[in-house]
Image (tube, rainbow, N blue to C red; front, side):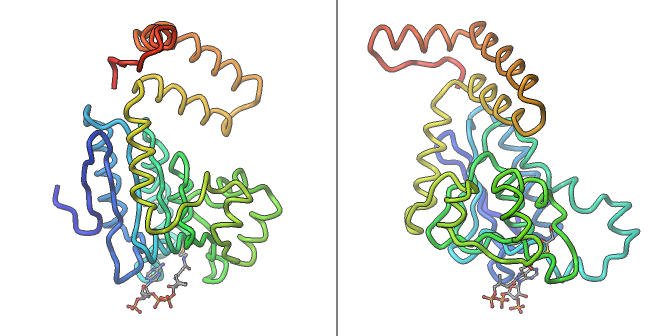
Length: 258
Ligand code: CAA
């Protein structure tokens, strides 16, 4: 499918998706979000791809949902179409890992989209915020829930109630991003990390992702049980045998399933 609002490339075993509506600071229009979901579907189905990177431009990862497109929607429009969760949530349901590489603005739906990814690498120029309150609405793509889990109630509440934007350093301090890299190196660094993940055993990577995600959805006891079952499952794979044999033989593991 030809895309008009995103760029899609493969780099080895990594799928790179670049949001590309520069004139609107990558505002997440319906067309863009539809294309993004299709691109993620395609990479999920592609056996050559082991990990994805989602990025924007130097100026903006994404400045939120498209306010101009959204402004005149009625309650019936948004209720009946289940605006915004359905298509938007595709990044959160991917089984292969997705790294968000964020430079510039990640506001509103942009911040929410980054949080749907498995982790966020931030450029030193990154700015995160949930400014919906300033335009008479609230975060609608998981912001009140995911941001609170990342940064805790106090900071999430302040950000959501005031619309205050935080810079990369504050985002790192509060656990929203895994680390900060110089803006010029952001995409290369994200591709390097993604290539590393793609070089590991695909099923074991998927199990690890599934297990970490359980921590956000269940009790500690239940999460520990899920982890133990998945840990046991790794012993049914040839890659566990290969990984541990390679360690004992002091050589690089040659995983079959990647
Ligand atoms: N929707 C539609 N268009 C947007 C947009 C958005 N979210 N953000 C920026 N744009 C457009 C601007 O309208 C402008 O277009 P024109 O040149 O045609 O006027 C262009 O992008 C450049 O933006 P600015 O001129 O405003 O650039 P700036 O550098 O002065 O400011 C900014 C940058 C602070 C990010 C500012 O654009 C801004 O505040 N954007 C809106 C941020 C926002 O409120 N996001 C939340 C949206 S609601 C949401 O996301 C709901 C949800 O939970 C899913």
